[in-house]
Image (cartoon, rainbow, N blue to C red; front, side, top):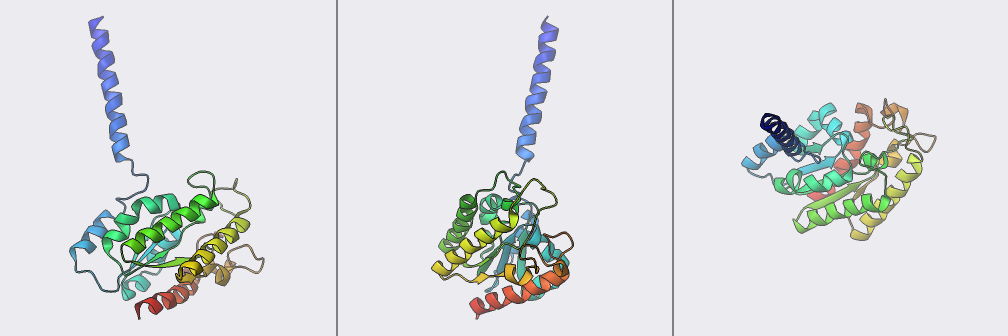
Length: 232
């Protein structure tokens, strides 16, 4: 009886230990995703005009597909594939504030609308964007807001419907907020929109959501103009 009891307690302890390890290893917001790169930057003198791009896979792919755009301009890419605005807020201090940039460009909303973090709620997503703006402002960081890119649907989430209308509504709200706060707003949406009025122009994408190099060419022209206006 005692042997069975001890065996049971041993198994229970092993399970609880595994649960604790799993919980400790889980990093929902991926605040450690850029840990090594951030530590390197924070050990160096801070450039006067550091610029950080905060976003999801669209931003992460950008730094990968067009690394020269970031390297030549001293821009820092902090995009993480699959993330929604909720995760942006959690890692905003780690990936933006701690790097002490002059400017942050925020591109949020695609994965919220794709319901990567649960049912989409425009108020919550917009609130997360406002929270990031307020965090930046209180830390003396200039903000550039940008539109959600066009998308007719999301291949990894076919159950999501009405994406074009949701994107338009969120963009209108971000733009109005930017104007009310006198924050620069970069309108990728209108420049990347297909003739059908709802899709990402096929000249700029292969999957209908993520830009290819030609799409980033368009985006770079727009965002660099906004950045240069602030830095000058």
